[in-house]
Amino acid sequence: MELREDSYVTLLDGHKMPVIGFGTYAPPQSPKTLAEDGVKVALEVGYRHIDSAFIYGNEVEVGRAIKQKIADRTVKREDVFYTGKLWSTFQAPNKVRPALEESLKDLDLDYMDLFIIHTPIELKPGDDVFPTDENGKLIYHNTDIRETWKALEECKDAGLVRSIGVSNFNKRQIELILNNPDLKYKPVCNQVECHIYLNQSKLLEFLQSHGIVLVAYSVLGSSRDENWTDQDSPVLLEDPVLNSIAKNLTRTPAQVALRYLLQRGVVVLAKSFTPDRIKQNFQVFDFQLNDEEMKTLDERNRNLRYLNTQQWQDHPKYPYHDEY
Image 1 (cartoon, rainbow, N blue to C red):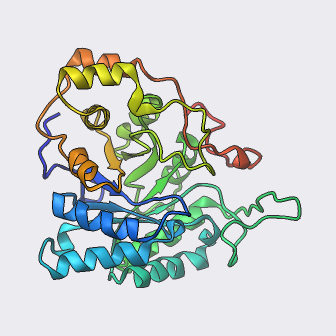
Image 2: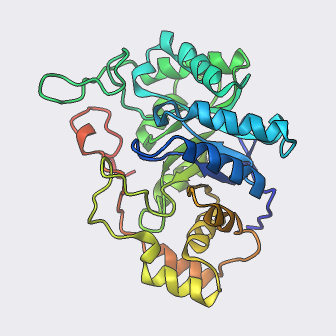
């Protein structure tokens, strides 16, 4: 797969998504300025795909960075592909558009390029983003995901968003949307955890058979946020096989981990708040992994998830009950 710095994939609806994006999630205790400064550096380096979400709590800062880089002529608005996400307490159809409009207001943007359902699991609607009962258990709600999807389609028709998709969905949940007789627009993507330890080969094959793009997060492992990640899990970038290939190619382990996914047709979200690493992670277009290196990295798969979703497992729509 030939990739250049301006490489993009054409989505089902004809819009183009850059194949490498800049992820802006940081643990809650991190200063919000990290995302703002990171986005500025990323846009200066050449990234044109910025990924954030309402629940990250940084849309004001991310939007400010984008506006500043438009103002100083680093980019034009049409150059930037911005992804936002519908949080789990806003899945009721009457809450979808207001949630999108609130995010647009915080971002100070007229439209999003992509708006995705953050997770198939719905939480009780209301002001509390993680509603819990007296035992500290999450309080779920159960809107039909097809009704949520219909509300997203209406946002697309209204011009508030160009493309719509999903995140953390499994095959069964995507089929629920695809098989809906009232379907107007297919999801253009499914954003899921994907890396050398969780290569998602079956899900990728299924998505590609429907023209749906797999967008990968945690591609370099994880920020190891204690709320979501087992602190004993292996550090992906210390993987000996990954490091051996990187050394042979005089590349960083991160560059090889990114390149591996790109060559499989996966769109990657690279996340760092260190300017040098932000730049390095974008330098993945001038080398190629050969078939043997790709096969060797395929074999690193161990179906390991860094995102620990233990608290969701009693939910009937919990996405990982199925194999994929």
